[in-house]
Amino acid sequence: MRAETLKGHLDGILLAVLEPGPRHGYAIMEALRIRSGGHVDLPTGTVYPALHRLERAGLIQATWSAVGGRRRRIYQLTPAGRRALDTERSTWRDFSTAVTALLQPASPAVSSP
Amino acid sequence: MSRQRPPEPGAGPAVEGYLAEVKARLPGPARTRTGIVAELRSGLLDATDAHRSAGLPPPQAALAAIHEFGDPVQVAVGFRAEIAANLARRVAVTLLVTGPLVGFLWIAAAAASHLGISLAPPWPWTGLSPGVSVSIYLVAVAAGVTAWAAILGIATTGRLTRWLPARPRRAPTAAAVAGVRCG
Image (cartoon, rainbow over the protein chains, first blue to last red):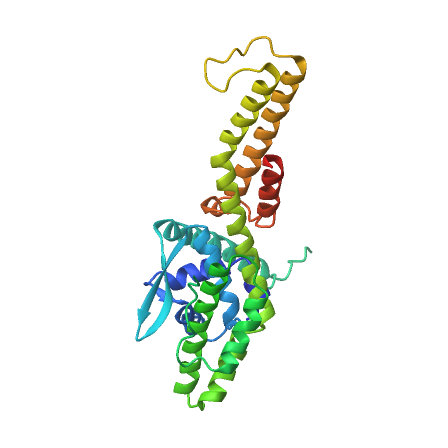
């Protein structure tokens, strides 16, 4: 799935990936691939600016941490981020319901005698 | 004194070359750019480890990690907007904090120079000449514009972005307006 297709939904997807617990940047990318069944495969480098944008908005927070001798920037949801994720889910449900209904093949029109 | 961190062990020439390409295209303070590069480096090393675990030899694993991260120009472009927004926010906050003081000093200096009053209170504010009054009025207007531009800059670059339509490109403009007005 291309980045253009995900445009407008990447923030919510990143928040959802962080919902189970803190992750560093590459682990977030791996979780995106696994949870999407391999359909979401963005250039990994483009995910980092998106994470910084969410951090600036106060939806996630980041801390440097040394794990296994390697320093990593670990991201986790803030309370505002959890609320934003709830809103994203609700908005997506409404949107997908409406679009699914619109994209279904229309039933043949009943011709009047 | 440089606070730049040394490259982590294991970051080979291919990874360092990629990081140098990204860093060369990043604007902003050295500390910010160094932090971004350090984060990308740890991610590239994680990616390299993942490809090695999948069976690739180290040189190919590093190249696969670089390919996975994508075009360094695009990565840098993604960060440029973030860096600009952060800088604009810092400028706006600084102006909002220091603006009232600067405005007060301008008014005090204008009044003192035209009236020959002392810089210590009590100040005789009555009887200002029309020229001084216009000057004070202009300074007040400039201070107002500065304050609004600074507030706009803060609103479009900080936590309020979650409620506002994303307008990161306006933030540097607002900060620039505030800076010019204040200057």
